[in-house]
Amino acid sequence: MSEEFNSDEYINMELLRFTTAGSVDDGKSTLIGRLLYDSKAIFEDQYEAVKVASEKRGEEYVNLALLTDGLRAEREQGITIDVAYRYFSTPRRKFIIADTPGHIQYTRNMVTGASTANLALILVDARKGILEQTRRHAFIASLLKIPHVVFCINKMDLVDYSEEVYNKIIEDFKSFSTKLEVTDIRFVPISALKGDNIVDRSQNMNWYQGPTLLYLLETIHIASDFDLVNCRFPVQSVIRPFSDEFHDYRGYAGRVSGGIFKPGDTVMALPSGFTTTIKQIDTFNGSIEEAYPPMSVTLLLQDEIDISRGDMIVRENNVPQVDQDIDVMMVWMNEKPLKLGGKYSIRHTTKELRCLIKDIKYKVDINTLHRNLEDKNIGLNEIARVSIRTTQPLFFDKYKLNRITGSIILIDEGTNETLGAGMII
Image 1 (cartoon, rainbow, N blue to C red):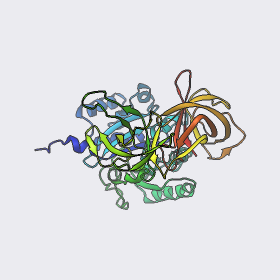
Image 2 (cartoon, one colour; image 1 turned 120 degrees about the vertical axis):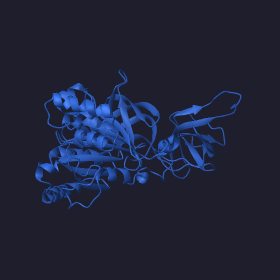
Image 3 (cartoon, rainbow, N blue to C red; image 1 turned 180 degrees about the vertical axis):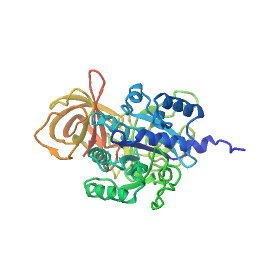
């Protein structure tokens, strides 16, 4: 008899967000399909539908890539265009996968999928080795400060499961990786098509003594990926029930962006600078004794202070930077080019205000990673370092310290379109 499903255990299970990247036809979607299938995360009718679709396409095997390529254009071309999110779980962990495109013209889509990821899976075709696109994706993973990067050397079945080929790819990458700011890099030889080293250990690669991909995903340590030192709580809304039962209730709701908050802690509200203590921390399931990232909670304070959406609650002796002038690495996501002197809406944590582009310092050549100081025309999918001045001070940290308080997005004031995503330097 199967074990009874425990909803509380499932809700509290640790969540790993990971993104996939790689050149076209490296097998990203096949890998995700294999993970879903071998971990029994798809239904029998879904598998049968994919089997029928594979037969119609004249393929000799069940094409598991069709499980993730949701757009008709993707299925017709056999490529990934948009970011496809997939969810599955094992007894150890819950997972959210962002299957992102490999083409250079979809760089913005990769940034979108990778912006919240704990881990990046970068696929490398064992026959082709490290390509320009591999370096580009590794650079974007480094730029976005993804803490863990796993290089899956795929299609090992097409190089006779050669250890020499695998070792040469690792050596080739190490000469490039010195430029990257990634703390944890791993390598796994796999065959997404045949299932080698995905869920079960490969019998064809006895020379590889490391973990399988799924075991790595289940056990890689992510608890310390968040900033647990610098307390940051951007206020999202003020909770006032106005009921007899909660007549005097005033709580400040939001998501903890950094540090650990406990009842009795002395805190400061920004921008006012007033200090008070935390009286209570509430959640949907009742009061708790500590709150840490990425928990969504409501803080009740001892004193009545004027706090509203966009303000931030921090520690008195540990405050973020407060400034109207910021430097960011900007990934441009819109067909309209970035304009020097342009005025845009800017969103940072829960705060929204206006800003001006003061300077475009350089454009990054995504292919060579060199800085182009001459070309200041920033278009779709391009990356540049820019200086911004905001109408009011922002409370921020450097992106490398805190990915939440260190990131911004620019919005078109007329159409409300997202124009660019920025990482504060």
